[in-house]
Length: 331
Image (cartoon, rainbow, N blue to C red; front, side):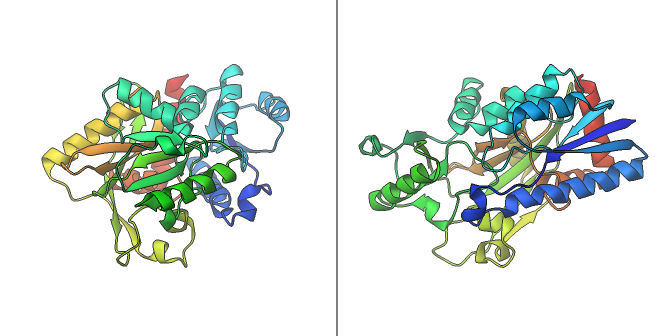
């Protein structure tokens, strides 16, 4: 089979100045692993690293001779919305491709829009507000809250200061977020302190939920238990060293069923396809609340999707083959 392996070429961006370039570099770990798997599977593959502008991307993709595109493109650095734009170009070219469609990628990047879509399908989500420097006085949630970027991924912008317990800290974090994202309002959500889980849902016509993972925090007192940028990407940081993952998660039969049901509902409500990851926390009643959907999660070895696929009995090579088959099934 001829496979076009599409990904973003690493380029300088605003994340370099912020000390957050590791997430962009991390894409290459997935590329190297998928490349090895494609070779082991005996597929004839062509690598297609993409660089801006999008007009040139269209021309590049139109020239690919492949039976399926393995889409690892995660957006040009500092321009996360280009993730959906490139998927849209592939759709326009009528090329079969792996992963979620452009509409799902665009929806899940815009967190408030995703929350509304999930609520419309009955999926439980945190209370939230969009705040900037002009409407800070309208804040009406209970503390603690967490302040996030409205439209970014890979935990960009998240640190121990993101969880706020009073108005002074809230105002500071909102101001910081607004300045960082060129005036875009910050997403402020009610912070849930319960157990944290994530679930990979994969498939097309008959999607299934892979074994669940739980995020295990052993952080010193005073540090909020959240997946900061450091927890994901900075091996020498306190957050990285004191954050682990347990897969399969140890849950009761009833809780496991409720988490899987929430994950599946969120996956379908967002229009995901192929594979996606759903992040959840338990509220004070012990019920799962969907915090976020990643329609294009990292699939490098050791990340959530690969870990959960392994727990389901798939080798990395087998996982890659399954993702290709889902892409073909979607066409």
